[in-house]
Length: 110
Image (cartoon, rainbow, N blue to C red):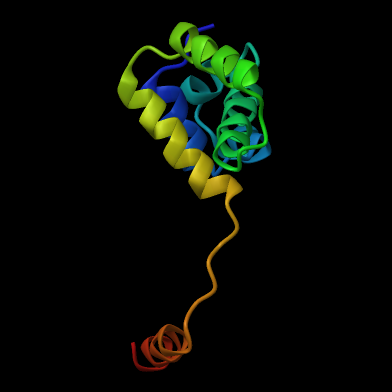
């Protein structure tokens, strides 16, 4: 299985929700995810997050990196995978009071 930028992009478009892809995705998009690619991307993203949180051993990290070298077709895709990991696994940061007030005012006056 090879994962391309297109796979990662579609995963991001549907916000990591396979059911959304199945319900509203185009036939071409659905065809790209016939062999467990969606689940594999989710697994890789979660592993990246565990690495960031230092929850994996050195050998697990090395196994993950060698798997990435086989599955992903470029270094850009590795960076995109890290971005997706941050986007979908990390908890959202709390908004400051100022940002909350500005968001509320923006919503009222726009």
